[in-house]
Length: 612
Image 1 (cartoon, rainbow, N blue to C red):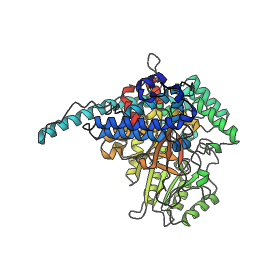
Image 2: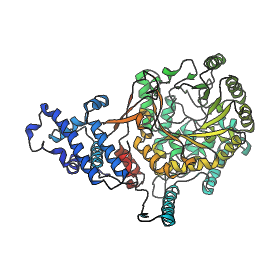
Image 3: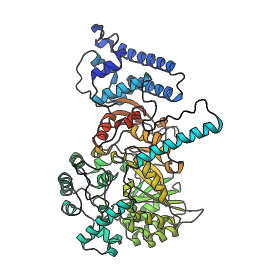
Image 4: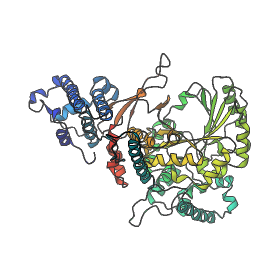
């Protein structure tokens, strides 16, 4: 489904929706709205029943999807769900069927309604368009069936390889050569030697924090430079290490001026769009500071300074409130003052009070040290703070949350690796590094060397992926997972991009992440796909998207956004759980239009409509 969707398309797709209302204008009176709701529900039952009878021999997949669509339609037509969603889909359809003008209803709204009715009628994408399955095993058995199945699996693999081959890999020889040339020019600009370039402290001392310097070092549009300038004038946190600048391409457009998108994920992480700057400043005007950007309500889950606790046996410890560079979509952009801010290290008394709190709560068996990026601390400070946590006898695991593996891999020195390794106590204490690598183009020989240095000390390394628009093409995330395993990093979480207003341009529909997990990740070997897709619920924590028990689609907005209700992880565990959280998603049609604008074939994504 693509194109502009209108009321006329709805009439053509679902003629039963208009019986008998069009024939009898007297039916379109307010008193009959309740009857209209009954008509909608009866129509869904009728269409679904006919489809299931027709699909009796079609296998479980089509029947299951038909039932899903019917269930979603029944939910969004219910008075109870629309009260929670804050918008009545039944009323909107009643109005347009009765010839009342509803200018608020966007094409994405009609696209969703049409796709849901098509699904309930059994008219949908029967399988993913990414795999052409023409290897039937019907009538075969034994070795003959096994050989046909093997040919089928080969065809799947070759198709996957085709998609993955379209993404530039930072470990490819051509990419390594490009980065080498760029690093030489950046070193020349700063007057740096090869030894200085490999010194993480030199990298920190030369973080780029202004548009003027960026324009000397990076192929940057005037709009991007203006957004950086405005962000700095407004004192928004910003910074990029020289090493990370070397990962950006000199020319990211082809000879016709079309964006290559090769380094788009790298640029999107650190170059704030104008819309981001506008929204952050608007939030500051509304609240007087940046506290309005605390999307996860961390202040409500902080029992003592520097500690966040959402789950029974783990807490977050934040002793160092800055990073060498700032991700635009950072969860804690509201409390980070600037890249490598001088006062980022917490006072000794606060650090000691936080560690004492951990000691006084033996239920805490695992501590995630994050911030900010703790590995951006000086060695002495890092060793002292991590050593304090390791001295708590009830702590069985220490996680270090860091992005220095990709922003500044030279930080993983022999001293650092040896120190972390020295804290391991097999059978008693585990040391884990959790990093955030966003795209396969971020991988470099330097990253591989840093990972190997940690692995040789027995340190486990896990990756958290933020599923933004810039990493959401077919098999893009799968390509990353495959490479991560090759270099020794385990996939851990894939985060649905948080619903923060300032990062609206980064968000992807939940349906796309579910499609990725079901269709793309499933085609990888188990060790390459064993991460968990999650939605972060403000004030509560992670909701696992694989589990439909944790969420349901309860409505649509006029712009075509799906509205979901997320149930707290404590639901069913404790007697009184927090209230469910209602979230508004990105319109699927809008997302598909963005993909088309960068040259993607939308037919490869059509099954997205049937993931809820």
